Amino acid sequence: MIRLILAVLATALINLPQVRAQDVQPKPLVLLAGATGNNGSAILGVLKDAPFRVRAMTRDAKKAIAKFGPVAEWVEADVTKPETLVDAMRGVDFVIDAVAATGIMGNNKPEVVDFKGTENLTVAAKAAGVKRFVIITSSVSGKKDHFLNYIGNDVLIYKGKAEEVLIASGIPYVIIGPTAMTDDPRGLHEIKLIPRSDYKGGTKITRGDVGLVALESLTNPDAANKAFTVFNGDGPATKTWTRSFVGLPAK
Image (cartoon, rainbow, N blue to C red):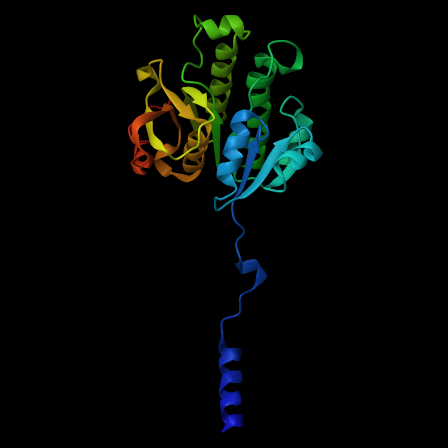
């Protein structure tokens, strides 16, 4: 009897479908540019629990690992140096661009980082066949008569130019324009998406909630080629905002 049972088990094992290595599809790969910045690090916190492989871009991988730990595949690259982006972009399916200028002069000014840096990243993404490019910009990108241009060396003008480059590239894009951002915990208040033309000052959103919107924007079919303002409402957090991409404008 024991021999019969063993024979039956052996036959069953032989007849089980064989899973080949080439049949196991890897998770999609997301490149997060600006991963160590205020916005990027909040987005990184969202991505680490998402169903993606994450490649986090930094100028100094050793320092990034010491600060954030091995939460992603860290890669050294610089948006102002296009030659460094080829390896960073290899095999990438989606890009989240959270890069932002940290100064108003030199190599960290808006023209170099927000505009030229995004242009370099877009060119590299196009060459790599990226499926969607999500960028964090501003609710008032492109505005010429805004006070932020006077104190930020035309930062909004250069953010607007960066958006134009991305749109013209032909890569499916999502342009996220946050209102004033805070470091409060994510997921506590409702998220609202509106056309940027309807934006009014006085609203805020947590950086973590911007990360949630960026994550959803990667694959939501209704988010493709949309540009919008995002902010926190007064109500409690819900999931209904994920249906708000429908009807939003392209710019």
